[in-house]
Length: 445
Image (cartoon, rainbow, N blue to C red; front, side, top):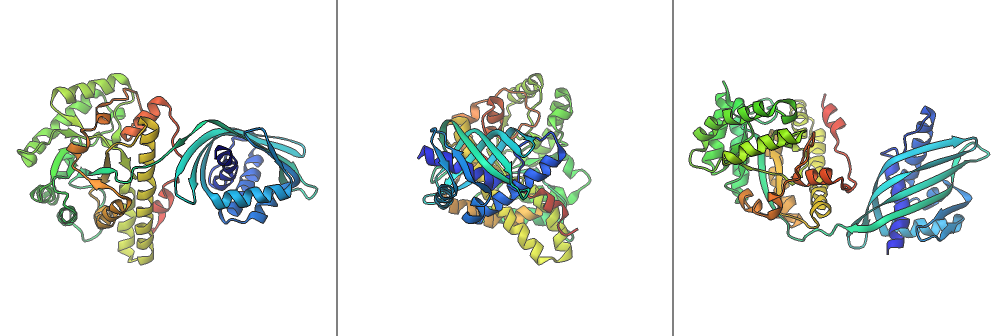
């Protein structure tokens, strides 16, 4: 089994190569040449074009396996590719790589991290190691693979996910998240999103409030009243949404305190002393991190940590532009990519927990009260249910002992709770597909 995983790792390297360079070449032309080779290799493998893949090698090419055995020649490579591509899907990242070129030979070497998915049962494992690929230039001037060596380091990490994970939904930037599409109001969005939550029996869901969003904004004030009248809860997201690394601890604490009268006015008897860090940034120095956490604790706040985040807010502005143009095809792409990225990054967050804690923990999903997330919420909830998720309030979820742990690390960008432990311990992230930010920023412009 492990031998096959390592062999599949070679093919996974090719699958990802088209999207990510695996080396830092000294010469500019090397980057273009070898990136093109990787893209060709990746496309052939993704499309299961075994013959095209084999054609990328010299007739006597050699693949050295981690156990010391070697596969040589076209026929053996053909069998290898046919077996592995029908057995596994692969996703891979490369690190600390380099390319050297001398005359008609070149070497590409570095480290990899790979996520292997069995096509038979969907089980996934993460493996790490090193690789070396030697190229020879043919008489016709084309670079061909002459030798590959694939090393596997340590034991693969099995990323077996629970059949029925637990999740709480939470919403940031209330009561005015993101830009409003033309013709919509904050009150309208609040009414729609709370109706969706009530239909899913999720009364008591927390929304984290920035008081500044209601200054001179009667629509936003009314939206927050609608949220609370529907049986939802509120917590603090600071008054003005500063990033902690961009201000002093004293200024950040003052901004939290400034938000309290708003929360007391609207939250009244509810438990509003839950705090969500803006951007999930908890401090780039330990002194700053400790100062804010000590103030929060001494004033009765609990940090509302997050375990799952797919940056749902990134779809909202594009949605407004596409609505204005009545571009139904673009809106359909936004719909499909939103759900696909939710699935991708929710699974990633769960797999991170296995790496960071050794097991899954109950989850908190970060969302925003934007127009597009409001539009997508019923389908997102349905997708979560189909995945097996069971829904609980955030107060119940964060009773899990993992939420009492603190990575106690100076992190410039923070992130979800698993992110923080991964970064603090320098643990390997499972490979993942990038979010489509470039297209989101340009669609319907």
